[in-house]
Image (cartoon, rainbow over all chains, first blue to last red; front, side, top):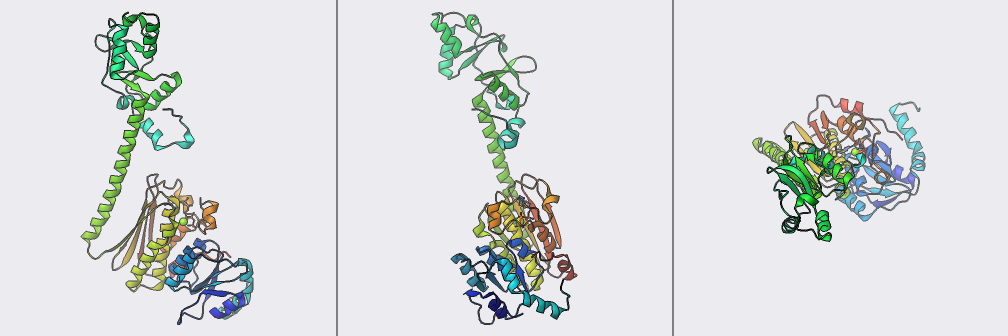
Length: 122
Length: 323
Ligand SMILES: Nc1ncnc2c1ncn2[C@@H]1O[C@H](COP(=O)(O)OP(=O)(O)OP(=O)(O)O)[C@@H](O)[C@H]1O
Ligand SMILES: [Mg+2]
């Protein structure tokens, strides 16, 4: 799935824009409000959807090779978080949806991924 | 000093009270008088030695009574300060044995409201005096000793890990000390670990597992311990991550290793910690994992191979997303 498509469906605004050459396609999305849940995911090449705004989100994104972070619920992260994101070259967006709503908004992409991978919807 | 022994707030202070015996705390430099001495002699001795009670003995160390300031005052009031101490002393004296635990003597001091207790040996001979001050001093000394011993142990450990590296020049070492609740620093160690393994050209999966294991260990020390040291040792084949802290350890490690078990509070959860996924994930990310968690401190050791025999195993074990 295309990173830009995810951003469009979530109607998200960039806080730290991706640098030129940043991967434009992602494989998955990981939605979580607890850091360890993100750290425990087996997903690869994924984008994080979360209501957390501390610099730790960036540290976790870095550890898991996440391709970006979308902050939900319209929260404004502290400057320290954005600073860390710029330093680690991890793009950050903000959208006004709740975590659950944002997942629903991405449903078409999930369907698309399932079909592509030949997994039947459950 | 007043002490209440409350099993809920059982501290190193109380532990010292149980460990020590009366003879470890009592004063052995005794000021004594014979029964023929006068109450005036007693008053002068108390003033000169700044003590509030004098044991009266015969044959050098057989206790026959005790003269307290109270007794001196009474003699003064009765205008009888030149009388022999034998006339005014308290004859029925509570004593303690030198070998009983200090805690028992403290309870005795408290219960009877005494300022001091004569200490007898097994032959009923006077061998010391015990006051509240003696108790405080002995316990403080013991706690100091323990603190020094703990520091020494930590220094020894550090020296050992240092020398281990020096003996093996091929080993690269990373070290970070962390303070309790210093969440701003969380991720520093993991960042260094990831950079170091990447430099060795390992697969992205290996680098990710090393970073995750390091991060979870680091956060646990910051959140759950009284501070500690995180180290990583990199050889040509693997990285070993060693996390050691100053306690309080984990009462039930099997339970703590289960997914979802967490003692984190609401504040910490609001910051995104406390899923109870850290320890199980650390184990999953490692090729070798061990944990020991006595009250003196938790030690976690994790080894991650740079060329694991089968990359698939770690993925198979990974948990499914819960959302
Ligand atoms: N170094 C430590 N010292 C003392 N207790 C610890 C330590 N590490 C873990 N624990 C205990 O084990 C529990 C489980 O740890 P674990 O890392 O699995 O989860 P967590 O830290 O509570 O949450 P998460 O890691 O998912 O954010 C902790 O809640 C804590 O009670
Ligand atoms: Mg943890």
